[in-house]
Image (cartoon, rainbow, N blue to C red; front, side, top):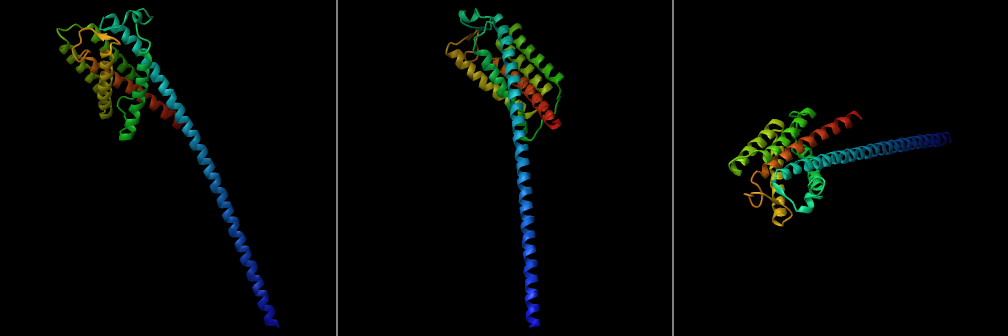
Length: 251
């Protein structure tokens, strides 16, 4: 009998120990699950807030670039019209800025797309652009771009080829002075090609015209203007993106 009682007592103790261990494991598992749910919730909230901040920053940059594109389109198109480089219908010339209503929003949209694309391409290539990254350099780049446009309307050469070669050299000088990146050069070439083709289609369909065209309905120096404009807007977009990244890190 004593052995039987001792055996029963040992079995009861063993079952109590196993029950305590099982309850302790359940408690640890429940706490771990609770911690994982808290961590997941925190990470999802952080990701959501970060995504919303990035989206808001992207919209702000796009609006700034759109405004810059509209302003440059109005000023530079007015300069071209005053020098009789481009000709619009009479009803267009009677407007406030001597410009068709669709030119500013189209140029603003193009500036937003190009300006947002430049930092994206830099990030994709893994080559962050660090050459002359300050607003003073960007403002000088804008001034040179306006000067190139002014030269295209003001300078008188014996033929368009000489003017085109001069503006090409100035445009490459602008890229070398303020950019010097492969992505900037490639996107500038792409912008010049696409914008020139669109302009040729508009002129071909009689929307407006150029005086003395020598390159498929347009002036031969027009791609140089678009190239320098793409580089200029790209530098603005890069600087805006850099400011947004610094602000995000500070927050």
